[in-house]
Length: 122
Image 1 (cartoon, helix red, strand yellow):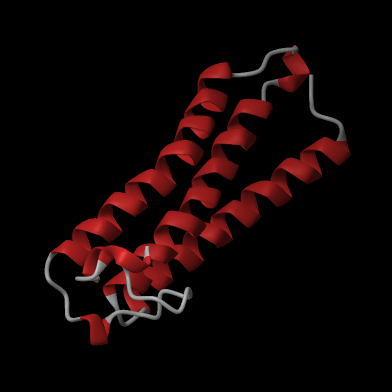
Image 2: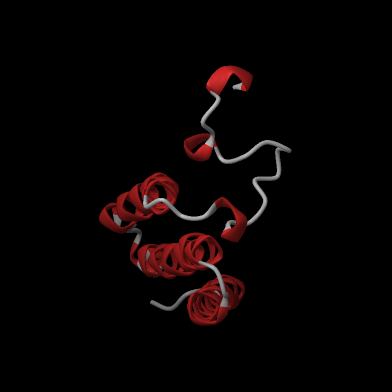
């Protein structure tokens, strides 16, 4: 039994889109200049790319009336743990005694929390 054309087209587009996300994330890992920026590219884009490939692989069994729950669970686990691991990597980078002048702006108008000597403003 084959997939209906619309579902097959959707899964193909999702797989190509996921591949593009993974490619862009890998390129960003190589080309971004600062470590904090290099951390952002693979955790966001590559997570979406791998997640899309896993979802396509799980839904490919739909014509037989099956869904691969293992791949769905791996996707959920990946989406939940990637931001946490990125946070720990960023905190490790900050605690390596990086010069605050070389870090990107925190976006809050305050310094990064682990670099502030005066904690009264937090």
